[in-house]
Length: 80
Image (cartoon, rainbow, N blue to C red; front, side, top):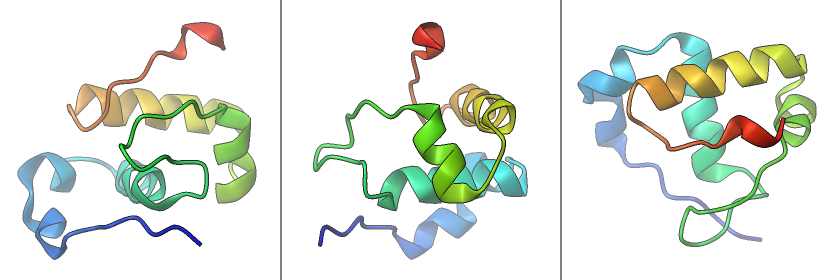
């Protein structure tokens, strides 16, 4: 089993706090999901996130764009 580290200070980070609840959950998911790699660089099919989070694919894509706009991730959604 692999673990992802989430620091308690994330809750006081202005960029994190400025996101919606979906955006915050997505960031926590990306930091700890079973598809991530040690360096935090990975290929994640939005369908995997949709299945794991029990969201519709359009919601996943919208929220990934939100998290990227907040400067929390870099995402290349061109292949969708």
